[in-house]
Image (cartoon, rainbow, N blue to C red; front, side, top):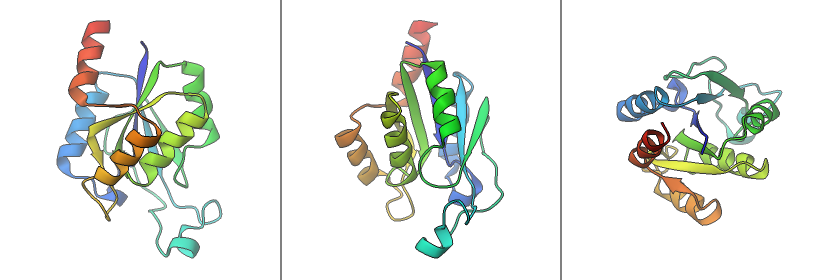
Length: 161
């Protein structure tokens, strides 16, 4: 099964812990990887007006990626979804920051596009409200169902390779 990795919001704006940055870097060296970088553009998504805060207007992924897709809201944009659909992966592995917000929105975007999102739970954290990510992971398991761990992903890559 062809798999790709999508790392969401592992960027300075969202203050990811070092263990998460190290973990996604190690996994991204093993698989085709895409970054989802959230940047502020009030004309595109009115974060300041509606939420009273906004991500940085300029930032960078804190990990390696074969390609980075900029997003201005929670879900993935058309360009990212079209590109991922063209690759026709068996599943899109998703990890990073925002299990209860941005990651969940990314998962729903992938699902709605006909792809198979699979959350890598031990490379995932939540927003500042629930940094453990447990709320978002429970919602993912309820609605999107597919979850895995880094060790399971590495074992599947070794079996395929």
